[in-house]
Length: 265
Image 1 (cartoon, one colour):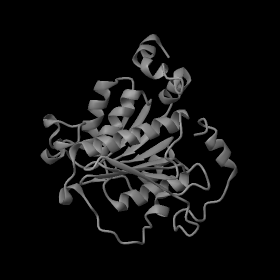
Image 2: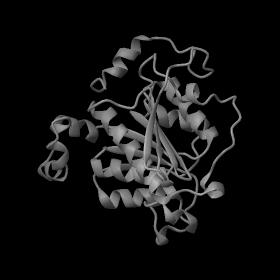
Image 3: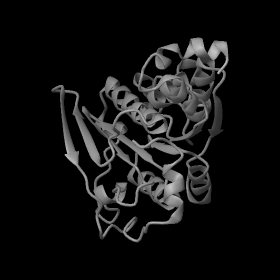
Image 4: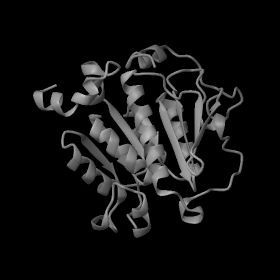
């Protein structure tokens, strides 16, 4: 790191759990964020501020006035602009050293698989089950850690699926794709503005810990946050041996190499 970076990231470097080595891992890392709405706004801004060297940000939607109640990466000047482009501009204004790859589209199919394969980890900040299951499947296939978040009304949740590890559960172990569930979207049910910031910031925190090896991640644990009553609870997760997405995943020689990219978490 140069002198300017040492100054910029000095408050991270002062933390024994991160230090210079941890910050250098962040500078060398590549995170993929799927969704630049409420969750993605908070996650993207914190990862950019923290110095994650390369961030790919995907979203096919345009900024609307109703978004500005909670999606803090955007402002009035962003109305009508693609969300990924708008958020990227804010990220680079905050930290010009970060390389932001804008993906102004809904990631799916081969484009999704390519984006996941090229990243060190993935943050799912989307707002629908179809995208979440597609992202999860790509992360299972490429053994990429997945940090998943969701928020609606006053309820939020965040979980880490460390798919570098064969015995780790995946998103489909928790929410089987064949189980029909009603989509709860902000446009229909509303959402408490600070809630998406809380969950998005937690996703950023989990991503940074995974990349640096600091602390213990939420791998195998679902954290539920009730903002209305200021309550948190935790649910332990196990891999479903009958999961339609990850049940056939077997140990492979590349597992050790993948786990060796970062310190154990």
